[in-house]
Amino acid sequence: MKRGSGKTKTEAKNKLKEVLRDHEDGLAIAPTNYTVANAVDDWLTYGLAGRDEETVKTLTILSRTHVIPSLGARKLRDLSAEDVDRWLADKSKSLSTRTLQGLHSCLNRAVKRAMARDKVKRNVVQLCSIPTGQPGRPSKALTFAQAEAVLTAAEKTSMYAYVVVSLLTGARTEELRALTWDRVFLKGQPETTPPVPPHIAVWRSVRAGGDTKTRKSRRTLALPARCVEALWDHWVDQGWDRLAAGDKWEENNLVFHSAVGTELDPSHVRRAFRSAIAKADGVNAAEWTPRELRHSFVSLLSDSGVSLEEISRLVGHSSTSVTEEVYREQIRPVIQTGATVMDDIFKRGAEA
Image 1 (tube, rainbow, N blue to C red):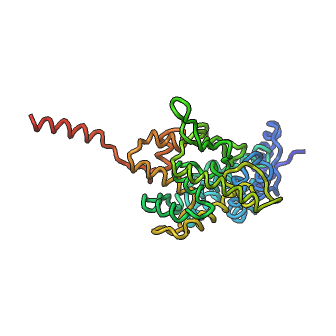
Image 2 (spheres, rainbow, N blue to C red):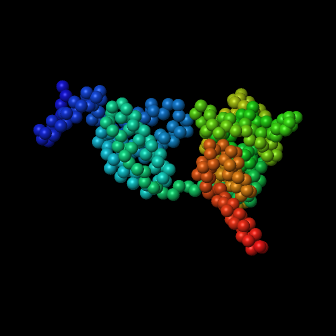
Image 3 (cartoon, rainbow, N blue to C red):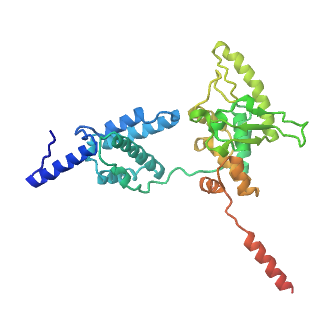
């Protein structure tokens, strides 16, 4: 039997009509004890299948650190847009805009999943806008002098080849962590016409499924001489690593690996990188991360006059607009065509 309750007879009748309408539409009645925490836990457990391990880890941390402690006890059907607005406004006092976007996404997707399973009638999170948060950590790039100092400091460390290849080719850190020796061609093909220089084929990533970030991220990059030399030395050193590890070695054909041949995780790379550049002149190692080698690659090319189109192709972006958006601090913002033409026009006018 369907029932509807209210403070007055009219209110009770309207409530009953709503219940009956939902029943006729095939909707289950939302459980009264189903909370935001239940919805988020269900999404984390069953809604992230196939996602990259690091992505799942990040979403879990965001949800368990910020979403559940603040809103978890709230009954899902009682959650209002005002509740979400207040929560995001409070978080904006201490978190960056990007983190706020992540929090909103976690809650939105959890409630959307619950809605699809008749736990709640509508998703109020979709009605809420994301406020501006605190300034995030600004991206930065090494100057030429700093880049030389970093290369010099890393030269006698196990991270040297990684630093050289990352800085001089602009490959993403997740692409280098997945790079295998069968994609490295240190001799090139000098016998062909035209000759093919030494190169690496960036075709894989540590992302879910092993794909690169986008279709255009799959690219072949010529190796500067410094990279070739560093990788040859690294290949020799890897043989010694294999001997030292003995039976513990796991052969994965990885170019960059742990002491036992397994894939490096981001925290491992970050710690090793900062240790390798600790003595670099003019660089505070604690303030830099491996991904900023790619930023530095873009900056150094831009400073040298390389076109935006060429930079975009080298870093594997789908368009130049992506390059401009991601590396707007590193791209030299100089458009001089108009000025050059006008100088030429008026110079001729003055001479006449």
